[in-house]
Amino acid sequence: MDSINKKKTKNDFLLQGSILAIASIISRIIGLIYRVPLTNIIGDDGNNYYSSAYDVYNILLLISSYSLPLAVSKLVAARMSRGERKNAYRIFKGALIFAIVTGGAAFAIVWFGAGFFTNLLATPQSYLALKILGPTLLIVAVMGVIRGFFQGMGTMVPSALSQIVEQIVNAVVSVGAAYVLFNYGLRIGKVVGNEKEFSESYGAAGGTLGTTAGAFVSLLFLTGVFLLFRKGFVSKRSFTSKKRVESYSSIFAVLIFTIVPVLLSTTVYNISSIIDQGIFKNLALFQNYSESDISTWWGIFTGKYKVLINVPIAISSAIAASCVPSITSALAQKDKEVVHSKIYSALRFVMIIAFPCTIGLAVLAGPILTLLFGDTRALSALMIQVGAISVIFYSISTVSNAVLQGIDKMSAPVKNALTALVLHIIALVAIMFVFKIGVFAVVIANAIFALIMCVLNSISIHAYSGYVQEYRYTYLMPLIASVVMGVCVFALYRFFMMLCNINAVSTMLSIIFGAVIYAVTLVKIGGLSEAELKNFPKGESLVRIFKKVHLL
Image 1 (cartoon, rainbow, N blue to C red):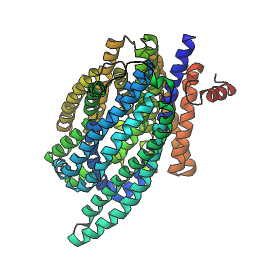
Image 2 (cartoon, rainbow, N blue to C red; image 1 turned 60 degrees about the horizontal axis):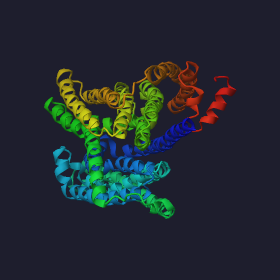
Image 3 (cartoon, rainbow, N blue to C red; image 1 turned 120 degrees about the vertical axis):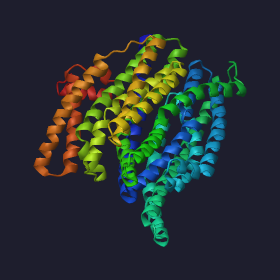
Image 4 (cartoon, one colour; image 1 turned 180 degrees about the vertical axis):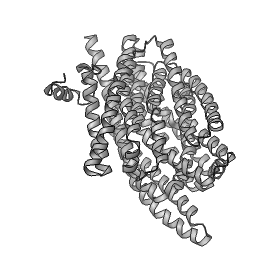
């Protein structure tokens, strides 16, 4: 019976992570789609202003509330595994108060300090875009607590649905507002004699307005779902059990002690973007690159390279979100075997996705950029090809961060991220001065940062949990299948272009055939078993299909 329960737990863990991963991918695809007209409206320089505002926003989001979903899910899961339903709900209420305070403070800092931050980044044109993002910090903080509560309860569905709702609203409002405000800025620019800068600045502000609108509608959706759920939750008989009730003072203490390490690790882990911007732009100016080139390069890096790279990384973030409460529950029950099983499952699942995405992006970088952005520049494609390896490194480091947090080694990701950040900065400066390769220094330094995180986190996981990493099925098999897929996709794209000479058709057909080739190759070389296939969403259906075509 125990083995059956363990298997069910494992299946639930992967299923819930997959639900969130699918929602994340849908959200990212929507994001890719709307970034195309948005980029066409505001241009690469507008993307620079837009991204600069987001860099500041993201740092304050990290500090104020980014760690709340993970912390809340971890604390709620631990109490639910012990049957402490009332304490789980008190964790939610305490976290909500915490979110309002920290989110409100971040909102005030952005609202009144927008000019200071944008001047610091030498991009004063981002002022309006950043100010519009201010209210989002409060909204996202409250939303994060609700998402964390549901994740701690073992369901990712509300978080998944709210992400899709948020991104749809974001897409519609961003494009519409960017168009309206771009033209408004154009009219102002004609009066003052600077049409380009004003139109792109106001257009970028329109893009950020969509973020605020999307977050607000998503919060309304989550609040409605929670109110429906709450009625049944608080009426349960176990809610009034005689188990020790935690005081709010102890809840705030445990929240802070849980949030601070997560906050530090995620802040250090993500702060590299704003540090990269400051170092790159200033050193590039020192090396006599023109402001126009620097602005265009950074617009491509943030508006195209990062957008594409982050799509597959979203899967690892989703698995990490489901990994933490799942591992925490197993740890609370002192079940070391299940903890190790979940670590293996999380890493293996993510690598099965990350490897083909990496090879696919490297092979089809140019066609994908042309399809999505109409960008045929060799510089943009080369940026994707050079940085595609980051997908694997960031996927591993994201999941391994979550594993360490799940096994209560909260300080380890902080130390590892700090070490990686310092080495990353040294690498960035050295590459810029020694090789003088412009924005490619940032691309390479980012990959170095993620690689160092992978290595240090893997060492920490082994030291603290005793988990021994398996390499053949986790890394080697997906790599072999991905290389086979990459060669086939390379040939297929050129074959389809010879047939129809239409990039959109050739690219889409190459991606579809590539996915089939990868799956077939992985199964044929023994890299994916029937039991593992059943753990995937619609796994039973996949097994039946593979058996019908005699692959299993």
